[in-house]
Image (cartoon, rainbow, N blue to C red; front, side):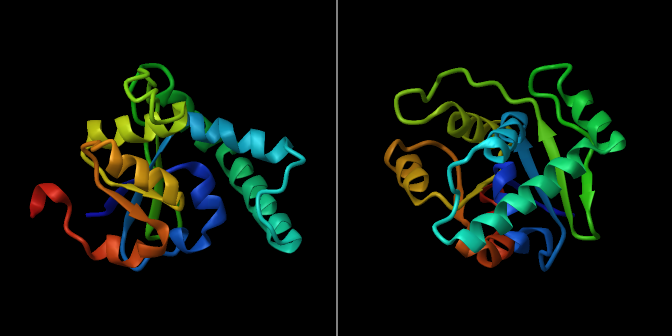
Length: 170
């Protein structure tokens, strides 16, 4: 059985190690974070401080967009968009990693503390009982501060997160 995490599509593009996990993993990605990839792709603003790193990340974003636009993957994604909270069939990345797209809905439930994409991550995590995986320390702090009923891991702790038992199994 694969270990599920809710994350943003850009995290998969930036952190290549997520696609080469030590054990099977499923990334559950809100559809709006795929749309966000197109914004990053067309933005002139740097994503990384180092120009070489920035170029590499933008290249990986382009690769991920191209992969999602392949006919079979595009069809899987479109299937999830028909109904709120529907999930796509798994989009495979090698033997150990897969991405499932979810048509999450921002209900503004956390609008005071979080932006719409962060809200969708939290609601998806809550709804599916799956931890969030992010590199945003501020988001982690706000989740803790707001006492949101979700588990969250920093990407730097990915190996620990893979070994950690889900909360419902503790």
